[in-house]
Amino acid sequence: MYVLAPRSQSKMSVPSNPADHRTDPAKPLEDLEDWEADLVRRYPEPNKPTDEFRNYGEDTKPGVREFYQLNHRYQTYDFVQQKREQFLPLRHCKMTVWEAMEYLNQLVDESDPDTDLSQIEHLLQTAESIRADGHPRWFVLTGLIHDLGKVLCLFGEPQWAVVGDTFPVGCRFSGRIVFPEFFAENPDSTDQRYNTEYGVYSPGVGLDNVFLSWGHDEYLYQVVKDRLPAEALAIIRYHSFYPGHRESAYDHLMNDHDHRMFKWVRAFNPYDLYTKSDSRPNVDALRPFYEELINEFLPGTLDW
Image 1: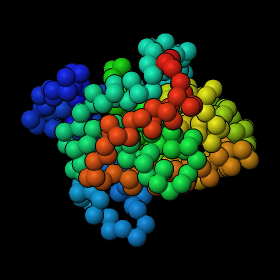
Image 2 (image 1 turned 180 degrees about the vertical axis):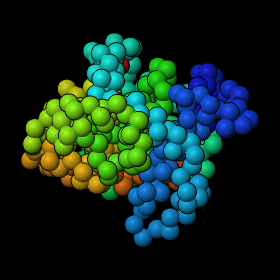
Image 3 (image 1 turned 90 degrees about the vertical axis):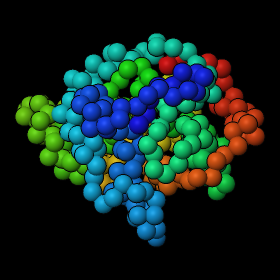
Image 4 (image 1 turned 45 degrees about the vertical axis):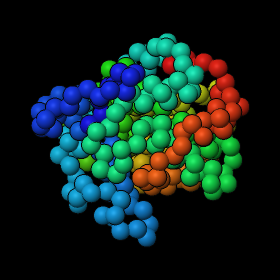
């Protein structure tokens, strides 16, 4: 599971019984990677046996179901507004991008069945895969930083308000969202302001004018929104919006700009899902290149 390790990198003790840990409603997942594992189970890599990458088994883990039940119950239109008021404008701390990566590295994953790599190493794996395929420098940087919004976990936020497939709030929940049955517990499902196809929105309003469920995507977008190309911002903001870029469940809210940007979101998705391996990147050797890349686009300290 993910635990917060001191900067000495020593690990804190872990509950011996995972079920005991899941009694904490803020932490239904044994580790945050369980959500990403379920994504790979739902969207397996083409031409690759589904049991080759993960060993969680065919069925969704109970913790993942519990996670989505909480996520779908509590991610309401009002909740999203409350979180925006809590975190925006950005005022929690100031960090450089590399400092944020090191801060996120305090999340120590002790139960990932794929690798025992650190968070920085996972980020470098994604970025190096993009770099190896010859993509633009901004795309490489996006791969490096796309998950840094998960520092919300270190600010005390519950898992279901940090990770998970994102979806619009303020309108009817699509049946193509994972575990749609859990939205029966969401009060917006019976609120006439929010339970119609368009809800508080209008046809083709554009995703810039739509509120998605709160999490690490939107948070990081707010950190970097004035500093990166539009394509990079779309990847950061919508890479967890699987009902949109994988299921096309909200095309009726999108405009032409959104459709152009989703070409990049979809191009990024395989790097997000399928780049983990046991090959450990050499952080010290790669750091000069990536610090130069960071300084090109995101120099100095940023507000978080």
